[in-house]
Length: 263
Image 1 (cartoon, rainbow, N blue to C red):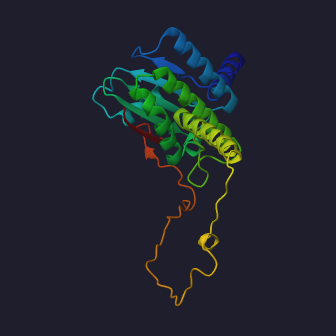
Image 2: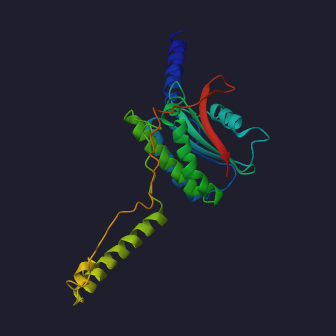
Image 3: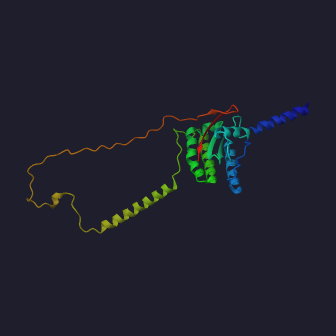
């Protein structure tokens, strides 16, 4: 009897321990779009984020969803493959259906609060262009970097939302334009200084300086109002309050957030 009790106790402790760790794969490339090196690099990146923030993180690629909607397919996959950490099975999973050319991000538990509707819009904005161009490793690396950034901010109890917007990195082309304009401005300033030093004759701003004394006399003057120009500018106002997260009921009876589309 004592042996049975000890055996049950060990199973209970093991079960409690497993609820704190993710059982789903960090990277599951079933569609075969990544090399072995790329997959290993992404696994290392994701595992580090999982361990530090105690939130599951994964990317799955499949050939198709078998005729199902990618939302329900991803929600079921998340649950059945054992993704999630803690009692709420918190985590975020990116699903890519190559045959359907669709993507979907599913969130559960604490990740629903971390990745708000606004936050999921940012993920879409930053990731989908890479997917469209076939730069899958870059897309998944960006996904991991953004997740880490969002989790770090939420750890300070300030999840990104409409009242706390995410600062987008400046595009490379815009950085190039700024550098070019700055260079032209500096060069133009130096040229202007050098040109000014070559002038030997100045000019007068008023016409009176060019009129000979006694040769011109005004007998009458009046002011005429010709036209008026009004310039208006729209003032951008911040969204009042945070947007939060939309959720839906999954087939396993849980709650999940998410966002998806085509690429």
